[in-house]
Length: 335
Image (cartoon, rainbow, N blue to C red; front, side, top):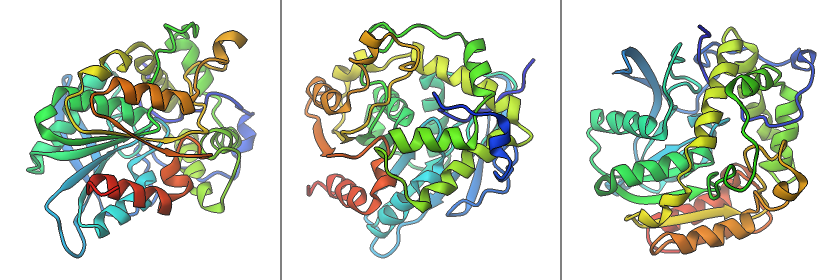
């Protein structure tokens, strides 16, 4: 059986492995990569296995407001990629919990795991229970937006507020005509992830064609994990995660949300799973966040839409100061 872990979201631009020659090498649980705050481990049993979930628990600085926020990362992101938001939220008085989901980054890479957003939400709920946190604002980015939606649907009484930052899953790609790609096909694709491929994809999609030197460490983080001793496990589990994302839409349940919800959208984003193998007709109608944000805001009862004109898939990393100011204003109820 293939070992399992998870990594990249690199849909295109895969180059020969030689392109990774100068990339740092990190361990199977991202050993060697420095997290911005102390890393802790939540140990628990799931699906007959003993697992470890890496997380950061950052106390409020200054005047604590008594509120907690939980940050849910995207597929080729980690808890560490919330670095700037963690600092800003802590300074604004919030306790911040930033976990790495099972299969990602600093967490366990089980040899087998039935991935579902319900399972990941259950894992996260277990972590919060262990920390004595009964209620929190849940903030999810990219794939983390799908997970945050599922969490809010499962635990509405314990979700103080739901914030989705350029979430994927604002549409059902398979229903719109994107072809199915098997797990084995995803696996073969993910084996070819490279640092150069990551950089090109992120520049085009995350940052709307722009690049800053501070983005390089996030390329190294993913490429180093792919290049390390967990290479095959990373590719295999990445394939499993893609299948979860593609086949488990949350789109149809947005109207069922019962918690205060904010959509924060970089409107130049074009992310859509499978767009690289979709027909020209299908590709032309998917991944249009300028439209999707408005449509989904209408689907969610009482939802508010905050747009970042011209920004890409990761506004919290592209322009952190502007993003964090807007985020904290929404959490404080003072937009």
